[in-house]
Image 1 (cartoon, rainbow, N blue to C red):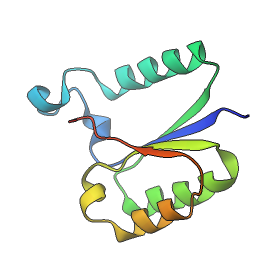
Image 2 (tube, rainbow, N blue to C red; image 1 turned 120 degrees about the vertical axis):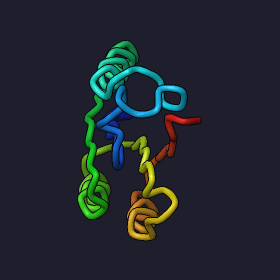
Image 3 (cartoon, rainbow, N blue to C red; image 1 turned 60 degrees about the vertical axis):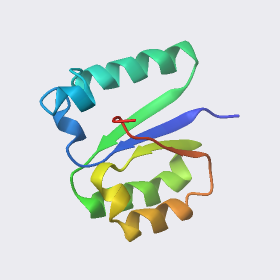
Length: 104
């Protein structure tokens, strides 16, 4: 089994550390990437990251990921509640996919 995972983050996640710290904590987006990379290395998982504030760019990345990755972790952020296009693209991924939210 291959262990190539894409982590996709949606709008405003690039501003972690500047956002409401009582909800999102004080770690920056770069801190988050370093923590994910460290855990992936320990578990022999190859990960790539993608962040965009643009809905269409996220849809395109999900489509491209179908042939490049074995799984996906996605935090679509505000688009979780509004984007039929992202939801539709995710339905075509057909591999393990975990949706998460930092505020959880």
